[in-house]
Structure formats: structure tokens, C-alpha cells
Image 1 (cartoon, rainbow, N blue to C red):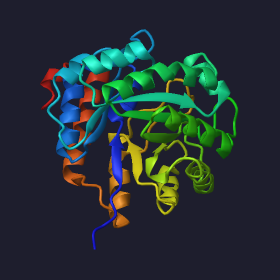
Image 2 (cartoon, helix red, strand yellow; image 1 turned 90 degrees about the vertical axis):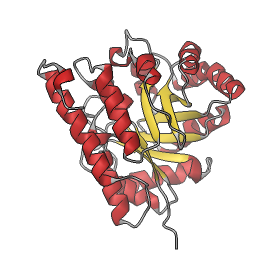
Image 3 (cartoon, rainbow, N blue to C red; image 1 turned 180 degrees about the vertical axis):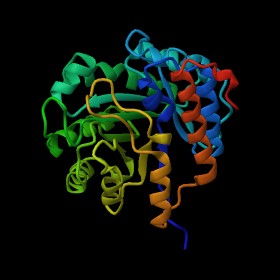
Image 4 (cartoon, helix red, strand yellow; image 1 turned 30 degrees about the horizontal axis):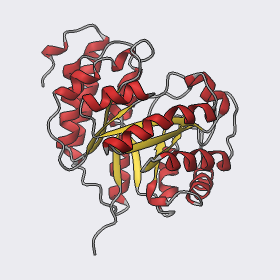
Length: 297
């Protein structure tokens, strides 16, 4: 009997590295992505085309993409905030673009300075352009299990944003516990609400491990049919607009948990460990002000 497959979407090169307090060299980013690909991860978020004034760590995304090896079995994805970002992503050869909304009005205003409805209206031209260019569109929903400003977020609010993202043309919607406060019961209630309006095979889960419950939350949703999980190698990341969200759940931990549950991921644990060691070692050198070119590549 063939094991059920769960696809891991690796978000470390974007969602992880964008929060580093010091500049991460292009060489390190490319080296990391090459190692992630070698580990069997084929859905990899490699950068964003957000204004460098807002997210300076992603300013070299075009240079990173120009140096990446082919990814015939999957896609390199990038985050875009608007039509200008989409056009830059298309010119760089992005295999997928992602847009982002929030289930919390307060977080939406703090993050992108507009309401949820306004944010979705802004993404309509992006969705239209992606459809015309035959580039897959992914959607993110932030704060699905709690907001740093509003507190509790109702599952029905998450479901409505997810529904609208799919109506725009998103083939997949990733539900993010942005500040890592959710519990397994809350996660299941959220997935159930979204699955009532979006096919469950189009739902992904994106957990932060602030309270140490990310794996429990993922595990609780697997038997509801969730088959896509976002994770960041070495637990990199967080959110600059969400105080108390220090890191994404580690890809290594997610892959090990799925393997123990008898679920197939296609990930090589040894190669994944190498990728984690590479990026943590390189970041330690960068933070210390050392020359990363001396780090073994």
C-alpha cells in the first residue's frame, strides 16, 4: 500500500531570512536553496518582490533567482504585494507567485496599511495577470488562530478570507498561525470552517512554534485531510509585524513527525540536516561580521 503523501512547502529562504537583522549574502541564499532542493524539497519559497524599503533582506531576490538550478519537479515561489511586484517576479522567471491577506483587521492595517477588503481588491489585478500568464497563484492568510492586536480570531473570519482568495484564483491557501498561539482544538476548528468553503486539498497549514505547539497543531489537522504543510529549515523566521512570533516550525521536525506517522514527504533527512547546518553556520558568521565566503560551501 502506498503511503499517503504530504507536501512540505519550504519557506525558510523567504519567510525565514527576511527577518535576519543583518544582510544575508546572495551566496548563502543560493547555497541554502540548492541544498533544500537536493534534500527533496521541490516547493520552495525563494524570495519576495516587496519594496526593499520595507523588506531590505529580499532586495536581491532577482539575483538569487538568476542563479538557481532547474526545479523540474516543483516550483520556486515568490511573494508579491502588487502588480508591479508581479511583473518583476514574472520577468525573473518565478514558477509561482503568492499574495497575502489577514483574517484580522488590525493586523491588516499594521502590516499593509489597509483593510482586509482593500487588500483583496488590490490583489485582483495581480490575480488577473497571473491567470493571463499561466503562473500559479498561492494565497496566505495571517493570524488565523490569533492576532497580536485583536486577540481571538473567529474561524468564520478565516474562512471568508480564504474563500475570497480562492475566488480570486488562488490554487492553494496557506493558513498561518502567525504568532504561534493556537491549540490543536482551535486549529481543527479553523480547518473545518475553511474546508466548508474551500476544498481541503487546497488548504495548507503554516505554523509558528512560539508556544511549542506547532507539531501538535499540524498533527491534529492531518486527519481532516490537510496534505500541505509550510515549514522553515532550522526554524528560521517570524514576522516583523507580529511581536512574539520568533520562528516558523522547523522543516526537520515536521519531516520527522510525518515520517513517524507513516506519511511520505520525499525528503531526505540527512540532506535536510546538511541544509540546516549550512544556513545556521553561515548566519552565525554573518551575525559575527565574518566573511561568509570562508564558510564551507
